[in-house]
Image 1 (cartoon, rainbow, N blue to C red):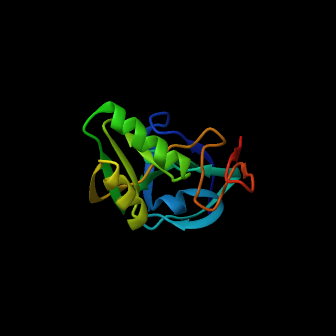
Image 2 (cartoon, helix red, strand yellow):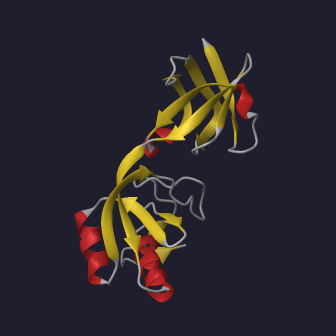
Length: 163
């Protein structure tokens, strides 16, 4: 079986050596070791030394030559916009305070759909709409990947954070 043990970041690998692509949702792009089947049928083992976030446009270098292009799959998301930069910053603060994976893209943010959070954002004055797009949230200050179930620091019993 073919093996890929190196992730070449988007723009750093020769696109002409692409032999296949793999389209994965966000949760499937945080991996260390997994058998994968490319969109064109390439069967290979992803075998990285440590878990890594695979980003849209990255190339997985196959040991025997060639690369498999990583594509981020469209997912159901919520797009958040604000009427001014101050509100945008406030909305970002509220999302960060709740440790929600968030993609910040120019004048919009993207999050996974959560009706409680969407209601909160609307209450704060956000413009919110449902979209289908690839999800590439910020990595966070404590590592490049923060899933909902991974929490990089502790909360005290009184709700304050221990950073």
